[in-house]
Image 1 (spheres, rainbow, N blue to C red):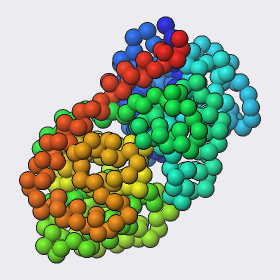
Image 2 (cartoon, one colour):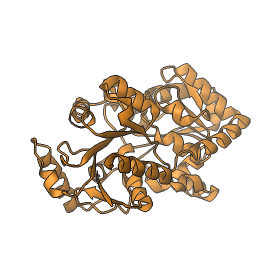
Image 3 (spheres, rainbow, N blue to C red):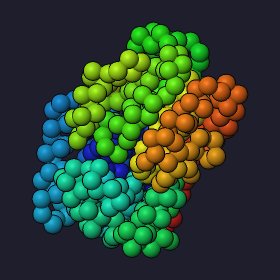
Image 4 (cartoon, rainbow, N blue to C red):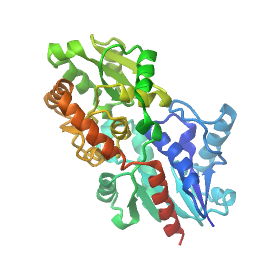
Length: 370
């Protein structure tokens, strides 16, 4: 039996996509493992709930584990090797001094700090570049969450393509199984009385929300009179002007803030359509989640988004407010267009399941361990 230890520190901090990935990925790795012992670093049990805004552990456990990470990252050492002597493969997310005897792996989520550094804080850019130098460039093997991300890693980090395995994320089963009554319940809970166009994501520069709000205001009066624009997601950074617009919205715009994971399938399913004009995504969880729930999607024609959309979305140039406005007008006023997009989206989303992601990941670990 081989042992794979996974650095699960992001489960202890505020995070969106990476925490979503680790939560479902590690659970399904354990469910699908045959002859592979999956352990979580640092001394973590399987998380029993997913909260993007806080730790999945109690406050004391969280403080102790984060303190341990801080100390282990301060200077070159092999303390983690003494702590986890039996690991054959160590998959790191935050630990910069992983065990030296184990095969080293990591997941490449995106290259935005190289492509669009202005959409990140200077601290995040520095951290990502340090991680690339100390981990990605010396790893024995890497997982990329999309073909687009692998291509970017080869281009910007000069990594050999053969060292990188593309393994798409999965989508949780509740998104595929959502029922009309689930949508009704979530609509009632959040006071969504009118049909709505939905956006879900952290309010940060990369999500392009200012252009979305401008394009919405440019829609025809008849369309704005029939639909609301609903935005769900926690405040991020660098968006004070956008947050001011969301806290004092124009008529027909609703900002829900952070919506718990259990409400998301119903929120997606209750929407007339979903819009996601991001400037760059390594994968784009919300696009696949919306499709799984049967919701028509408008998204950007850049980065991994066309790959994940699989021909089932209406693609737009995210830098063009006119293109975004026209796409929203088309999808909201054409029931036939929505019906076709919904059918194609459901079929496309079935490419992304956590059991499949876990099985491919386990094969990757086994091959790397020899």
